[in-house]
Length: 369
Image (tube, rainbow, N blue to C red; front, side):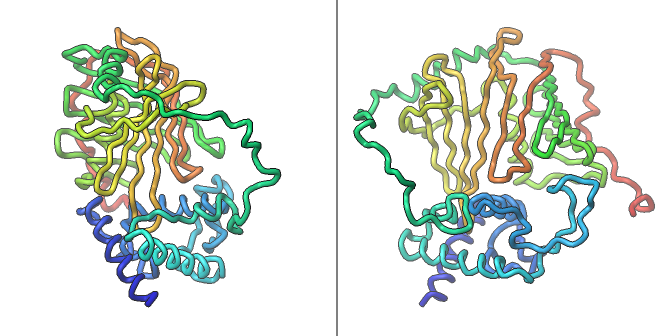
């Protein structure tokens, strides 16, 4: 019975995975030792593993074998992983727990990922069985009433007015920022826009070196020390979504958004707008007082656990009449990819050479190691 339900779960999740990234094959093609996550794409695999490890409060080496990491590099960059080895009992146990989660969600929730690792573990290896003692004093919890909410159009129009983007926009924009991450890593980011359809990102993060990505219309490329290649359609879509976060108005007009309530972001109340998609739900938080966007959170359904990505916008300042955030914090399920970007310069209508959007030539074959 459990085997049948497990097959049903995998089939249902395969449909979700295919809807999300139709041009990307499952990771099992390159990683044949995947036993449970056989429908997961390569781009989903490591974010999913990070979310699972964070749910249990452990690092990758709790389950996986690491041989001869580079002592000169930080823990997350030292390498030496032998992912397909099954030496450790926790890895074998993890597979059984994944099957249990898939089976439970199939039988009780129609294949939706309602129960996850975090549901029980809450950041510890041993699942939580009891609430903490002493219990909360319920007499001190005030009665709550549902707030009166404005229409979605009112929230959106307040946001557009607060940003004050000029009707004709800017011919070019160059944004320069520092990029601070965990393990004492510090780098820089530059984002360049030209016209309506060209954008280039350049990231410098020692010891990795420079990575550049660019899109022009429906095509794009990525280049680093290993060479350059064209971006796939799903990668272009991700770069385009990332580019929106640096525009004055950071989201497209939500056609089917729902205003679901008011939440507190730090010390500020925010209207919460949500849009449900086939495999992705996006939620935006708009400051009740200023109208500005404070937070964007995206939840992507995968075959095992939902993946969350959150972007916080802070320190808004007026530049050439437009309100722009000078601090953007990116976070997801991995402690190694959380990034705090503080902008040091934002310039509009400056000369930008078209050649920077052209993909550089790959290194000659003879220069490859």
